Length: 393
Image: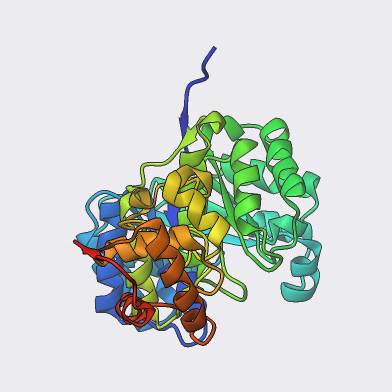
């Protein structure tokens, strides 16, 4: 029997956690453009900033709150009364406001960062959520460093903040320490041991310090989380955050998970470029989904397969993420099939005999150049001095 599909909400924190990358400061106008595009793409929650951190952040959250039509607009705070007061003021124009407040829960944070006790952490967490609740109905609580927090204590904290009015529980792997099975088991433990958990949404917020942010987020969703916090291009503090484009396409390509998002995936590539250009952060060419080489093929064996049937080496239709078509890149590793394909693209129909002759000249050219471009193909064919008629379309 087919199971009912469940929605995973996408919480985008590009404008908050993503902007914490050194040198990636955005002005208010840039943030407004990105927020509007995120809203149009189908993002459920936009974390617009940390209002108390600076007048600029306060202004950005205020202005974003005015223009976002569909998504929830969220402001981050610490478990500090003034933080929450300032966030509430910044969010007053939002159609769907959310205050995101929290505190560290791991022994490391309690002892070394906050210099306090577990009992005090619970008291401060409850007070923060209750105060936020006095302003807005939608309150998200984050247990900072939950990835390294003892599960029993984490469950205790979660249970208490639910009683205080939290609607979303954010379980961050703040340091990117967890393994996917470990993180998924933590979510499962909370689902099974926290009273009232079925009345709130569990959220994953995973960092990429060990390269497992996306895997951990997916594991969290499989085990019951129904919100994933992520950024465009995976940009973020240190090694970055879960990449929005990755989790969205994983759910799309794996319907057997029975999980889906409302993201318009055909806007992913354009959104990636907008964020990259606005922040001055180049996307690595081999970045999954949105990298320049994500749909590029240079190996002769792969090129031959893709030319015959795209699905031989591509699990995603490039059109689904806003890329026009796959790219057959001509290099010294390319074979005759790729050369014939690219030659046809620029107007030459080569017979098998002609292709053999041209290919010899092509290899000479490719051995001294990283990539053979369209203009080079004309030079190669001219240098080949093909005998007989050359069909040029």
